Length: 90
Image (cartoon, rainbow, N blue to C red):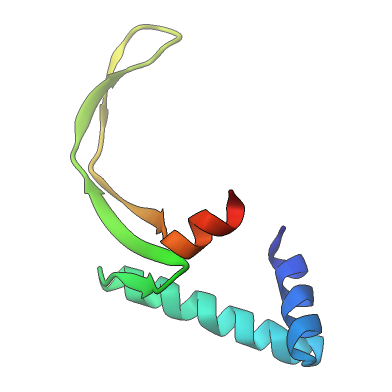
């Protein structure tokens, strides 16, 4: 499912016009993104938890040349599915 299909599903389920459903989906995604930028955890009970995780700088190898290269530190987003979501997809 892509973003447009998600918007269509929200519009059909809530009987909102697509333009309003687009605003709702964008607002939810924007709120999650904003919280993650502030290094806050987003916990949606029954669905799951979004959190940021810091990755330390490390040294890797270019598989083609075998040359060592430095991989800089970065921040990534992790998602841990909640129990209800896990049960729903089994």
